[in-house]
Length: 263
Image (cartoon, rainbow, N blue to C red; front, top):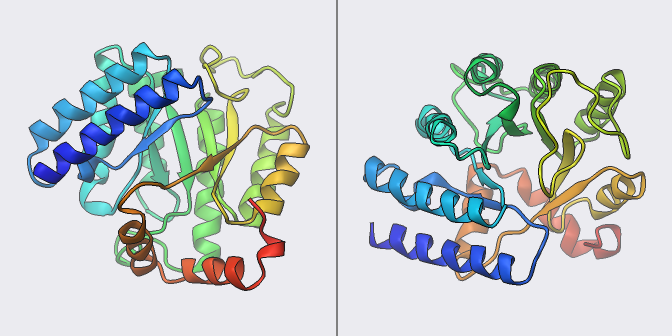
């Protein structure tokens, strides 16, 4: 929990810095960094303090989704905070998990149009008993989740560097009458959110597929860059590689052919 306090203090400094510099930025936090697997109650209190602080600055907080041990708890934190009037928080859902469509349906009932997701294929290599493991199955499931989120009126952050997912998302947006420069036309959508797109946005990691991100931005789509930082950047990067070695291919490409991947 000493480490958890370190992370809490650091995130407080980040919120203050973002606010003071008036940056159009959200905050992404990992619940286990606050001690979720050590002392759930203490972790919840600190997460609530941080979300409340961000709320006062009109800032959104994303709870990153980690491995299956904390999926239910992470979603429940969002539900509990919304009940307390803190709707500036949302979760990440992973397309590869069998449960994700059910989670979307459940959150549609509990949160309504205030539900705000980041949908990704998922970096954690989960057991076959609870997750898809084949590439096409993961893509198909992720695309189905995008369709369901958009149909539910949710705010949908499409976090992918994968063309089949991005192309499907663009087609789904068109089918809903959504797109660059268009106010969210969905009758079941909530009000416009500060520092957000018209019901959706695309998200990518810093240094990964920069040309694709710039192409989306040039077409008018709101894009957001996920930027890990700080003293623990090396440990974070190594953990990412251990969780899913395929990430190494993108890292290697960025080093070997940097001209293909400018930020």
